[in-house]
Structures are given as structure tokens and as C-alpha cells.
Image (cartoon, rainbow, N blue to C red; front, side):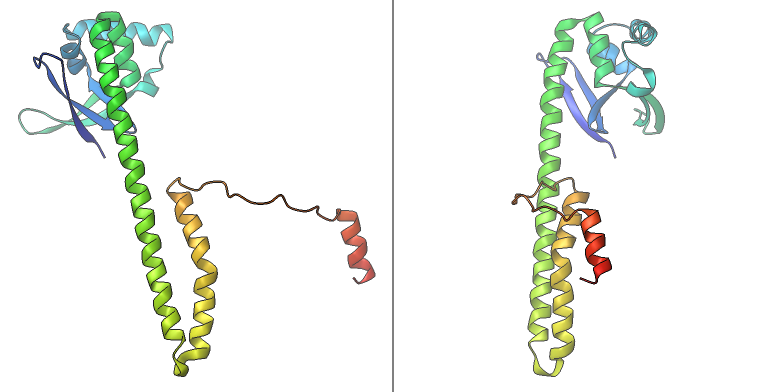
Length: 200
């Protein structure tokens, strides 16, 4: 899903709706022409030279995204990511490219921080809900008429709670390497086979 960011130059004479998607920023050729105060054919020429020289690969920096035009209709439009924008910018107007790059870096950093915070908040919320459910089951298991069934259920839930939390942290990209002690030595395979054959 795409998010819109507004880029405005220092004097306020230019405002662009910049799409933020797939962890990068995207502009069309027309928007790049506005940003760098040039005509679209110049942008097209620079992009062609960038791709021809092998500086960037077109398939890696170009994407068809939906764009809502002034008429309110949605069109599929070719957009270029931040790498392509900056490469063109240095060929056209390095001052504007530098300002845009600084703005883009700050915008992406805030987006990543916000995304990390939301994922961490959701993980903590889900963990708290799981803990509440576990406490409820423990209370139910304490009742005498339900003790055998309840105790078994509590054991199962307790066993899988940590596994659930680890899986969720993995899914969210938040799983960290556990701190622990170095393990012992494993018995060599040949020794283990002998032990098994002897009946140990």
C-alpha cells in the first residue's frame, strides 16, 4: 500500500506528492521535471543514459504504480525510485538533488522508525492478550470440578506460549539472538552407536 508524503522546496514555490512504497520514495518523470526545474524530455534522456551506461538497472528502479490524476481517475503510471531520482538529479541540478535527498533520507528514517514502533507495539499487545488468556485458563483449572482437564490444558498452553511469542517475533522481524551459556560436548556418533548396541 502506498503512502503520500509532501515535498516542498525551501521557498515554497514547489510542492510534490511523493509516493512512499516498498521502503523507498517514487516520482514520475513529470514530477522529476518539476523537481529539477527542467522539461520531461531531458528527464527521459538522462534516464535512458543511466540505464544504457549500466549505472542502474531499469527493472530495479522503475515500477508501475497507481496515480490519481487531477480528473479524479486512477491511472497506472511509470514511477522511479529514489536511486533513479538522485541519479537524474545530479545530472540536472545537484543543489535541488541534494535538498531532495536530505528530505528523502529524513522521511524514510521516520517511516522506518514509525513502522518499527507499530510492530513492537502490536507484538506487546498480542503478548499481553495471550498472558490474559493464560491467566484465565489457570483460574479455570483451579476449580475442583474441572481440575484434571484444566490442569492438562494449562500445561499445554504454558508449553506453547513461549513458542508462540518466538514465532510472532520472527514474523515481525523482531527476534533477537538469545543470550545464554555455551553448551556442552555432544557424544561422538560412533560412541553413541556403541552405547545403543550394548544396551545402555
